[in-house]
Image (cartoon, rainbow, N blue to C red):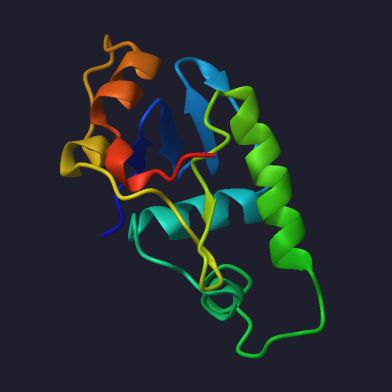
Amino acid sequence: MLPRWRDLGPLTLDLFHRDARQGARWLGLHPREFGLLWRLADSPGERVTRAQLLKDVWRLNHEPETNSVEVHVSRLRAKLALAGCESLVETAPEGGYRLPKANPSLLARRPPQADALDHCLRELDWSAVSPS
C-alpha cells in the first residue's frame, strides 16, 4: 500500500491531493509534475532515466520524439524555487534526474509543529549536493 504522504525536507507530498505543500501553502503542481516528484522520491540519490520516467509517469513503453519530460521538470523546478527548494531535482551527469541522497529521517513524517525550512537544512545530506 502506498503512503498518503511523503516528506521531502520542507515539502510534504500528498498523494490524495496530488500536490506538494510547504506548511499550509500548496504549490499547485500539475499532475505530471507531481508524478515526477513522487517517482523521484521513490529512490532518493538514485538516477531515474528519461525512459523510466516516461514509463512510470507517462505510462509509455516507448520514447517518443518529445521534450515533454524536460519541460515538466523545468516547470517543476520553477515551482520548487518558490518554496526555496530549486535544487531539489538534480540533473544526473549520466542522464536522467534524481533527488539528492538524504538521511533516512528526511523521508519520515515530521511533527507538524516542526519548522519546515530548519528541518530541511538539518536533515539534508549536504555532502551529496554538488556546489554550484
